[in-house]
Amino acid sequence: MEKGFRAPVAARDRIRAALATDMIGLSFEMTLDEMTAGTRLGLKACRARWLAMYLAHVGYGWPLDRVGYAFGVNRATASAGCRWSEDARDDPAIDALLDRLERQLRDLCEAPRLDLAA
Picture (cartoon, rainbow, N blue to C red):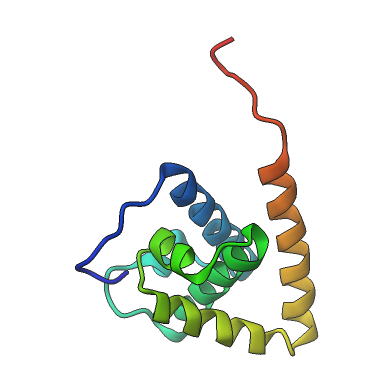
């Protein structure tokens, strides 16, 4: 993650960004720590993180500014990641995976909320 400027982000957006990141991490056998390290990421971790940003962008319908805020990066970084991810969809396996993850993400987020205190 980038250091420095941090926009205020709602807890709900951070939770949703973490969900997208975890789903991509599970799919590519990457840990959350590998994908969000405070140092320069390796190629695999960087691409996985871009896919998580893209999944949040298309799955939640978030604009790139909001994706950047939720993932702790600037809009240009979120945009570059989403462009790479869109190009990666030329691979049928990645395209099918992203379609499936996007459906699952929406299903989870649209499920009725329950009150655990009741």
